[in-house]
Length: 401
Picture 1 (cartoon, rainbow, N blue to C red):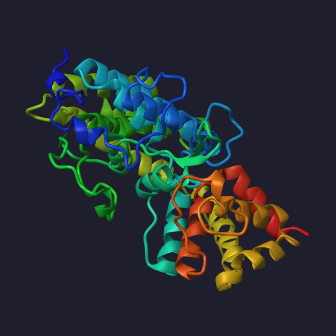
Picture 2 (picture 1 turned 135 degrees about the vertical axis):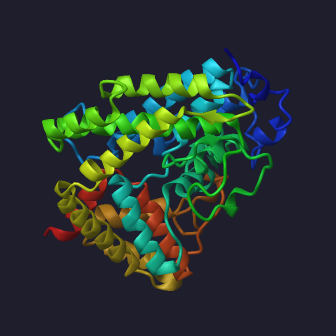
């Protein structure tokens, strides 16, 4: 149908120059192949080669550290979003390279332990320096400031992604209930975001990813909850009876919602579901919150997560001593060699320390380690990048003799 072809983010679009703008131009290509890839394709490859992307395979989606290989992790969720958004964008005539790049980057800011970990880090950061932590903003922070790639001169540089992809990351909040979704007209400084879902995305492609995010998880979470024995046969009968329209399973739900969105959407109306599909999504979402996300079986894990994250934070925060902080961290390595040594090495990427080899870096300095709030931000950033297994390993190093 290609109903959205005229508004796709391609060269003829009036927003194009803003959409492909980078904070800093990418380095020259020594092999003369600079035109081999498009702007958004280059973003895609920069993202999938980043360490934050690699760590997603060991980060919680909903269920922590499952032994069942078929339970969804964060990386699988991202792959699902990429698949759904591609199908929608391709059918509607939008730029699939842009949706692909946003999709693989949209959850880079998630902390260990999923949304529960996000809430715990937010509580710590609000208490320590008066700022909330939310993964959409943290994802933008990661691609703008924290993720580094080594160039052909062996120097570390920031990713410097395009505006359209960066906007898609911070605008992607999947907890949407809008009847229709349209992009905003004006570009804006993305630092103006103060909370999730505050502004509409800048491109139609980012709107597609935002909707694909929700399509991808609501059915999959039920499938995983069944495998984890959180749902009874009566629970499944209840939700099947409530929606009636289809037999509820993950692939049926994705197909139904994807087709429904494509049929009901237009550039004039926006990206829209039918009333029946919206009602179905609401029923399923409410069911998920009642039976899965607030299930008392999850409560012990959440209490454990709080202990783990707070203990690591306090262990590192207690070493703050102005200009002598790095010295104190190195002394801490006597007791916690992995935590202290790796944190010191990590800090050298982003702050002026004696361990930073200046000619090896071309990225931004983002921390002043003599400022206590800046130091606390660095700890939060470091913890947020950890995988579930790594953060537990670090916690065990702290508590075991």
